[in-house]
Amino acid sequence: MPDRINIPHHVQNVLDTLNKTGHEAYVVGGCVRDSSMGRQPNDWDVCTSASPQETKECFSNHQTIDIGMKHGTVGVIFQMKDSGCIDCFDTYYDVVEITTYRIDGEYKDSRHPDDVQFTKRIEEDLARRDFTMNAIAYNPADGYVDPYGGQEDIEREEIKTVGNPEQRFEEDALRIMRGLRFAAQLGFQIEETTAEAMQRLADTVQKVSAERVQTELGKLVAGSFVDRVMAEHGGTLEIAVPGIRCVPVAHLPNIKTIRLAKLFPAEAEQHMRNLRMDRKTTAEVAALARLFAGKEPENKIAVKRRIRAEGLEIATLYMEALGRKKEIDEIVENNECCTVEQLDISGRDLIEMGIKDGREIGATLERMLDAVIEGRVENERGKLIDGKYL
Ligand code: ATP
Ligand code: MG
Image (cartoon, rainbow, N blue to C red):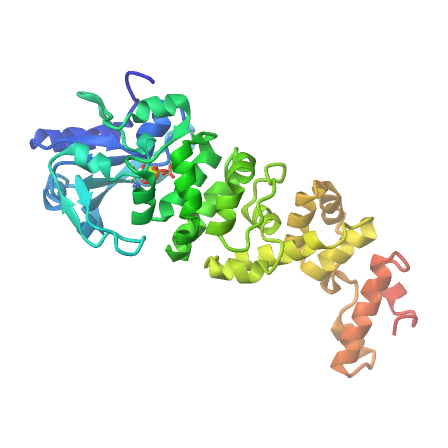
């Protein structure tokens, strides 16, 4: 563990501002875990002894947002200058979430604490956090506050709940998904009693809101160590997320829809809907799962048929999953005809030639496209209207 953590300037500023008015403040959670492992943190969270109202008063010269006043979270907005490259000085914003130390009330439904209570003791705040590695606070003046042995567990590469795992998962079953997700991202082992409790309570994940499960699943499948989780905790995951079949996916491109399509071989569309995936993701996963269940295209003609049937976007993802993206790139680069729109003849041309029936126009264009894809005729207007396909 490093003795010191490099805290970004604006986050240090938050700590100093709170300290100046007599409040305690620490960076906490994922940012401490990631920095102490030499990983780039996603975001910087601050916890403080100041009440939400006091926090807002401290940052009255900043724009703040009430992220969850009831839960004690205030977001402070910082305007950042990105001077990463000489020519671009894009402004962007960073929101630092500042949460008042709190004790979570009773959980009645494995979902949300019924009420929260603020506290002045950091140790109590750390006690409500899910895993020991996420229950470490730090500031440059006091160093680490680590009452649950989080640093030691990070060194041992172990994921372990703060306190009794069964009780912690009963309070909030999302923690089961979070544990699996962290294992997939960090490559840590899940400590034995924690893993056993996860398995025993896996079915309670179904009580958690689909959106929250979906977010964790997305991060899990993108993790570098996803296959290890599939192999070691597949049983748990298959109970937690109905429809998932835990197979290796790390060899596939790190694209969410591709990996999900491999993991949901049957009724993918319904399962994506149940997970409240957005429409595009749902459609992509459903199409890819169907394609994975079928035969691989044997030659260029078959590839073109996939483009025609599925559209370029899905066909490209599919070929990418097969490790054959080059073949599709070549077709695109050469602007080879795969769709009716790319034919050198249009419905309007056919109308001018006297074909009136809409259905016949469509069928004729499809016949022409068959011939072009199969290489029986060139995609040239003159050759297409020589009578053979009319
Ligand atoms: P990430 O790298 O994905 O941001 P993180 O650990 O920072 O991981 P967040 O969801 O940002 O995860 O949560 C911040 C902190 O809040 C966690 O580190 C943990 O201490 C606490 N936390 C988040 N979700 C829960 C939960 N469901 N139960 C208990 N503590 C939680
Ligand atoms: Mg975080």
